[in-house]
Length: 350
View 1 (tube, rainbow, N blue to C red):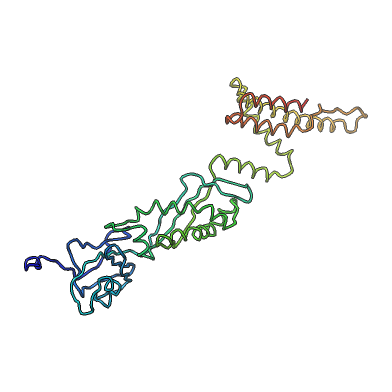
View 2 (cartoon, rainbow, N blue to C red):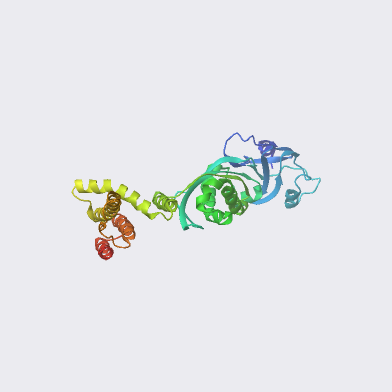
């Protein structure tokens, strides 16, 4: 090597990273055409770790502290280089810094409903979203599995992968927690803890630690929420089907009037009108009977006025007609299927 070549050769005597960019998980110290001076200073700050990579292999890992780079502080690298303890010359190696502080306020959420098993409903499709935080705890594994030889590797680049891991384990978390869907909203902390435990092994495989998971909201898709509301309403009614029929009649009368005023409402509207008319007729007959009975008290015995008998099972037929009307309106039943089932049910009223 000529004198000029030696003079041009540049050496590094201070290696450090101030982490001035937010969201950087891994940073490669610039080393192109540079060599590290024997005895150089390596500074690793709190919330950082440094990794020396020699010829593509991780040689040494340094935690927070200040180091003088010698054959004593680089034992693995020294072995790879076959250095003698008295051999004091510059060496070349890639140095990577890793941020080990918590990456907070990372968002996770379902883009599509996730189907889970449930104790009460058998299976439901739910939506959920929340936050999580993590940190790098094994820089060697993170370097070999994720960041590699990139000059920088950021939180944003890893976001999609980690978000997918969170969503992948929602079903496992619900199963582990044993919490029914109706109780999830009141047990968000337990569900979040179960989700963290279910997802942690996947983070471990990347050299990461999942520090915290929060659940902010859990809900059903709109169409399933309507069914749930109906089931809750039936549960509140209990065995008092008579009151439920009165309520249904009161709800159906305005719709029936609107349909008649506009010239009809289709097959589903006819079914609703028929059911409401039957229930209304039954209610009016019962009220008429009560009024006549009160008016005849104290008078000469006479044959009691009986209302027109209502076929047994009219309430059930009404409910079925309304449900069939909804299915027809949503396109689940064809006109022919609805007409056939309607005729079959109406025979039960005759």
